[in-house]
Length: 534
Image (cartoon, rainbow, N blue to C red; front, top):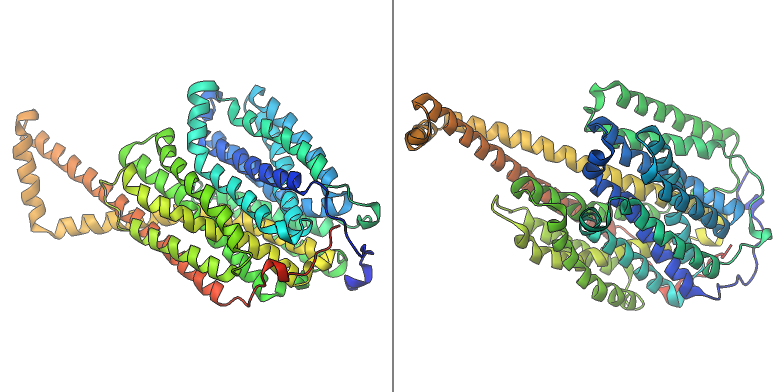
């Protein structure tokens, strides 16, 4: 049974929303809310743990529950919108998110908090895929690149302001605004959705269909997500919970495959995912999310570990990056009407590779201002890569023919939502693991080299002599000397581990360049075919 046999009638001339600019604003706000919702909770987790009085294990599941709920609803929301309409799903989901976010800070720990976090995650998980699909399928071609730029401006700026915002909320207006700030932004987003996104005609909505296969897939991906997010804390395959999550996820994937084979969903056409450019753009999404690791994890971890910087202090560095965003993103939107996606992606990846290579030579003494130059230049690179990635999703969907066939559009929407969320958690988990492994490697190597080096004993003896006046006796002076050397070795091994991790980021950019070189030509916006607006 083919998807074409069940294709619903499409209007010959789909209507473009009257208030397209309001729709773009809805897309922009959805990007801010999606990023703030999870980002502020992650940035303020230690503060929230102290306020709620919960243990480390309980606190570890706070962000996991929120993000896993977004993972579950991501692919499902695409089909919910096809069944009931984008506008209706966004309005109902937004109302639930507002209610959950308002009440969440008032809940006692820990089960009620988990329940409301799940509600907030499920509802906010619809914002990204459904508002982004407004860009991909409803905006006129003349506005597509500017819609992408608006979306990326909010996504990148919010990512770079998280540390400063969390510090401001905690120090000045109260911790509850970690939840209430995204909630306040949801209200104008709902108004923009109401005015800017039209109601889907009844003739273009899907009839009732089987959700079983899609639910199996969503549950499998959610279990994999939880396992990846908690794997480092629970020691991966040495823990029964992690093994159980992976095994259950595999069984659910098998159930999803069997369900699709014997009871296929006629409104999901996965043949469009076999296109070369679709898969390569999916990898480009992975490279883009990896590129954000330097802002969301690497640089903050380096400054916190080496120099005990607080998050508001680190946030000052990333606030500077917003200035290049304001210039680079509109410029990229204008240039994308003349230059193709591939050159822009190549330039962005090259810039990111160079700055990560530069930071791979970081010294233990590097502080905040040593990262300013690379971060300012990197802001331009990440702008170009983000524009190329989202434009690649939009343009590839239209050139592949998926957006002329709604069953293909739904499949591609679900695919890129899964790629985005998995790229986020996989990148963080992978780099945390890699950093830990490299730290152990360098610590072992440095200690072994010290033991082989005759100068070590002499240095220890010199330290003992120098510290003799400050210690009760010669033996205590030697112990203090050993402690100082051990601390030096630990700091040096951490520095080398961070250097290796920055180098790994540079190599990810190189692999991204290889993926871009394998892409076929993607047309300019003016040459793109129209999309189904249903």
